[in-house]
Length: 140
Image (tube, rainbow, N blue to C red):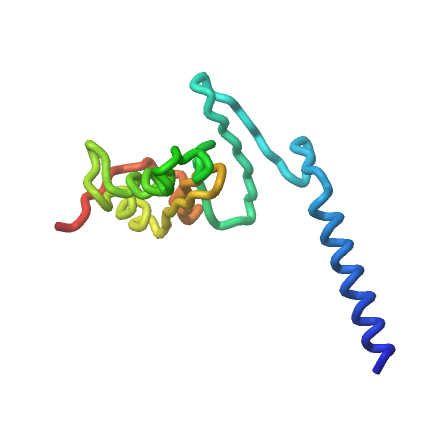
């Protein structure tokens, strides 16, 4: 019984150390294992493209360098509130229209607010990613 415990503990320590090493390894953006393309637009927005041909999805992520830590004193939750306003519609699209358009392609969208960033994302099946984006009317 003691031998099993010792072997189990050795395995756990080995897995822990292997995992720690993997997390500590810096990511090389020039690695052929992670083919990234990055471009900075004139307005300062960073666009990063990573193609993985074997994945059957296309995704768009927008990361905003503002999160809960940036909320003014006394207005806790403001960054999260603005995240939710994104889904309330725009001047040209009523509430739910953007979600309807994405979901009509078989995709989904969502957002999240963290301590130091807010992220918005859309995921659609790859077969629909090359279609021109046409506004679809929501059923009344």
